[in-house]
Image (cartoon, rainbow, N blue to C red):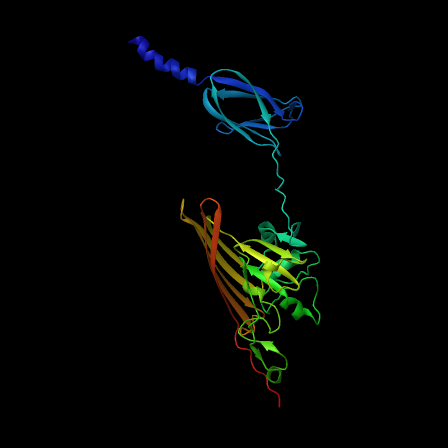
Length: 345
């Protein structure tokens, strides 16, 4: 009975015994590890802290027995966080690895690509995110010789390849084909304009591009676009009536997590949401996306505004393990208010 009563007292006294925990900290090198000086070694639970000396040595005194957490830190190195079972004096060795803060290489300009489609450049999703593009017109600034402009949606925008603004700008844009998921975006049927006798100059209505000019690319949102390829050389006959070049826009397909984005600047307020669903092993995938943008040129003059809504549903599937099929349904809606008619007396 006496031994039974004294055993817990002896065990408690043994648990309260303190030990020394020391060791050496090294840094990893290509050839051999080298002692690391001024590394921080601590036991946060007991507030015990020290630094390594010139030889990488450290020593922590009065460490209570039992399990405890030990941390080794050094700027530019991966932190070591481990659990020790302290039962006696210990001499440890730690090797710290280099912490690489360099980002993966990101191309923020168009990359040249070779193939049978002439001279072409490909703009990746990373470059589009870096530019924070509001429409396809903003992406053209990434091309060699591209002109950087303020991101706004006030006026109709056409793409002109291999030339700047000039008297032939409309004809150049008219000969540039915009391919959205393999479908050409045509402006051939746009005859909506106001007479010069009323407005003082030819002006487009209904939110579209001017007649005899190219497709209004401010109607194409960049939020769910995977890549853009611009062919500046002589393209193949598969692209139809092309005289100036081709801009191929490929949107995302397949399953993807829900993505909600909001963007604002002094002119544009934009909100978008995208989600891709996996319908099953043999049922394919459905990718849905929507975008709304509101542009005001002058907050004082609220009638000078432009609104855009785009919706997209893309179904993709593979048949017989070789035949891939992609079907896309796109809704593009652009709205501008009626332009005030000015009369002179």
